[in-house]
Image (cartoon, rainbow, N blue to C red; front, side):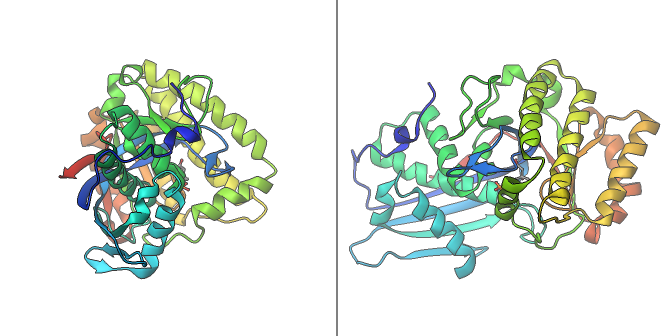
Length: 363
Ligand code: PMV
């Protein structure tokens, strides 16, 4: 049954907890139909659909200790070092979700977090980071309440993660996830993401690859928060939302059928539309770099020459995500080594694939 905001308010403590520690490893995800533009309280202007990655993960331990002092201690350690500025993002997230988990204010909270990918790689850590944190908070809720079933656990983790970063809502599920109301997905909700049922995804997509070419490892020049808000005033806004929702319908059928060529066509259009919106908006910005375009051209030419199903997508940055079926892997890796690695900063790239979702490592 579809839930409403009020369904996510914590219902009460059955067993008190003085001290607890939870560790979750949560992955990033790559959107195929992009979320770009929001409304209300971090709700999506259109539905989006992604697959969860396997290697790009954040591992987060949260230590909760019941407090009897007035002042709440909040600390965040990234790679073992305390980070005050970076911590503010996490603390403001905890503040925002307090209405749904009022018990959070009863504890001193210490967060220890690390990413499997380099911090400055240009890979957004918000999806993996916020989902890992939300999952740790849900573990405490589960212990306090004692009455939380698995479906609710992940739905609420997705609901909370969404409040931190929209795309994080999709990271709590294995394989393919969608977020946003859409007529093709009866259970789809703007409040939280759902997993696309595995039986609705052709087996060829279950092992799909995503090799991320790290074109520019600097910090993004425009935050996604700023990017989303620019869409409000964009002349193509309504057309974008219509197209994105139509693309969800199309992608649903493509995933079912296993039509890899149609898949590639759709995801490339989505990626280029995302960047075209950025470039053509009222405050224009360009996140692609010359090497991003060079890779795109190479990929398209090589695909035509060899007939190998290799496609690309982009998120809000210069890096290129190369998407291809497992069967094409040997050829694609050789192509990357021979022809694409020169476009990567310090020859860096990350081999990833459709993943199994978050994992609780402790307790
Ligand atoms: O979750 P945010 O606010 O970082 O936005 C993510 C936006 C894109 O990565 C460009 C698209 C998406 O759906 O993940």
